[in-house]
Amino acid sequence: MVERGGRLAVKKLSFVRKSEHKIKTERRPMKKLIAGMDLHSNNVVIGLMDVDGKRVAHQKVECKLSQVLKFLAPYRKRLEQIGVESTYNWYWLVDGLQALKYPAALAALRCLHKRRSPED
Image 1 (tube, rainbow, N blue to C red):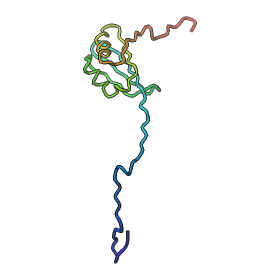
Image 2 (spheres, helix red, strand yellow):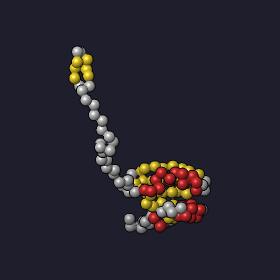
Image 3 (cartoon, rainbow, N blue to C red):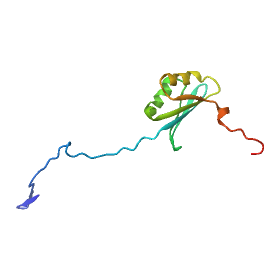
């Protein structure tokens, strides 16, 4: 800028095209997620955590595949595994998720916990 008689005047304008002014941005890789589902007779409690064990999201939804899918949709590409815990009535959920190529498996609670012996 140049001062002329108490006023400022622009000496030269320069415009930069977007193609000439490239900013490199590095994206961090998104962490994989693991989902756990506790299936009850009238609702499903869903919890999502990353591979470091940090809770990402959780919600209680109706026992409808459409409701479960609606909750999981934003996380689909990052889902590494879905474990469904249920004593009965699990087939519609696991079968439905597997049919849509979600990595779902039935998790039998009795197999997940190590039984304590009297000496522990």
